[in-house]
Structure formats: C-alpha cells, structure tokens
Image 1 (cartoon, rainbow, N blue to C red):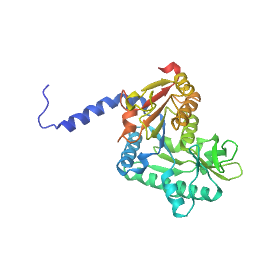
Image 2: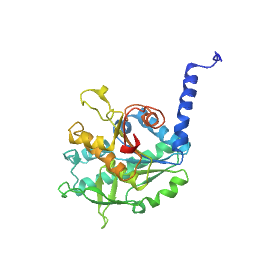
Image 3: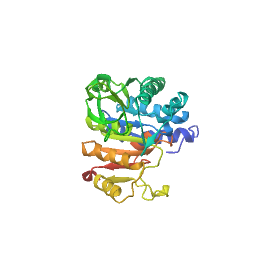
Image 4: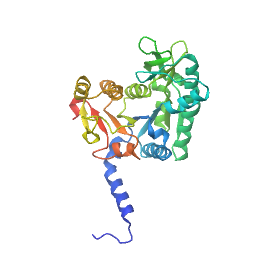
Length: 295
C-alpha cells in the first residue's frame, strides 16, 4: 500500500518504533525494573528530562520502575560551599561525620526531591525514600571502616515499596541508609540498586553510566560487548579486560544475577532515551549480562 503523502517521515518513524516496542512492552508489563540513575544523565538538563520521560513511560505501559540515585557532583558543590575538602580513596568518598551530614542533606533533602518532582512533572507518580524509610535498607561499614561512614548493604526489606509499585507509583530511593543503631551511612548507589533489584526479584537492573558499556578494548568505543553470560563477565574481570571504575559496576551486575535478577544492563546515559533504547529494542545500546542458561 502506498504511503499517504500527508504522513511525515517523523510520524512514520514514530509509528514504526512503537510497533517494534510492542512485544517488549507486552513482555515486561507487570515486571519490576530497577534503574540506577547517575552520571551525565543527572547533570545535563536535556538528559535529565529524557530519563524522566523514559521512566514515566515505563510506568505508563505497565512496567514497574524503581529509581536509585546518588549525587556526587552536587555533594561536591555543597562541600566546597561549606569549605570542606572532598577526599576520595580508590574511587570512594572518605566520609567523616561532617561530610556525612552534607551527603544526607544533599541526597535525601535535595536530589531525591528534585528527581521526584521531575518525574511528577512529566506525568509520573513518584514517591521519595531514603534507606531509613520503612527500614528499606540497613547499612553496615564498608570494609575495615577506614573510609569513615562509607557503608555497604547489610540487608534490604522492600515491603514498604511493593504496594506502591502495585499501585503504579515510582519509588525514588537515595543511597543513604542507617545501621542497626541508627547511624547514617553513605552507600554506593550501584550497590544499593543491585541489592534492591535482587530483593524485588526484578526482571532487569539497568545502570546508567558515562561509558558505552563493557568494552573489550578500553581505548576503542567500537569494541562494545553487547551481551555476556555471568561466567564470561567473571572471566573478563579475572583477565583484566574489565578494570578500573567498570569493575564495581560489573561486580554489581554479577551479584544481582547470582541472586535471581534476570538481566543486568550497563548503558550509556549520555545517549538521550538510552533507557528505552535498551529495554524496548532488539539490539539495545549497551552491555547486557545474563545468566549462562539464558544466552
């Protein structure tokens, strides 16, 4: 049938994309997807808006998204304003009590509510949490405690957010959580996202990053590895192909998959609508890690 000349190329492409997305929408309707939101996608306005629209669209078509966020750049800005020098060790923020006060203020009081408001502005129904709310996340000291109030996840109890997901709300969770005595800890947002995805029996864990994904050659963006098994991901770490800042992200994916998450994705958040491109298209744009039996 000939194309109606009154239909624009943009409209035709839009309909084609929607048609391609339909099987994925049907497949993931009712499933939980945990999204770690960070990097350039938090800093640049056009990328922020694209992420908010992507998350709201997921919720609108019946997927149950959960957003977990950090907020390093804004924490640094506030530390500088307060004449506190940011200190890092092996990529982790050394967090003394004074720094922890700023981290909690920024992540829980500012960044979390900015994300909630942004999602609500585009038609989502978002609700903000920290790890303390509903005893959602319990923290423990990271490693030997030499980094101060840097934490790890001791346990996750998602019962407070499950009814909200079932009602179509979008939980937005900051990566601050207390230990058993109520002391707040600063936890890596990737870690929180991975452990929460496992506790929710999520279909997908998606980490929005500032890299294309896992590269076979770190100097060559065209060497992107589109899909990996769990065992292959472990081997890439052992071989040093995955190194530096990509190591904790890949390990986060491995832990989530080992605990029952179906697939984990490392996606370039610098690409507008990267989230939808990864979830609702055949090839995606990043690296997907799955259990060995699912390849």
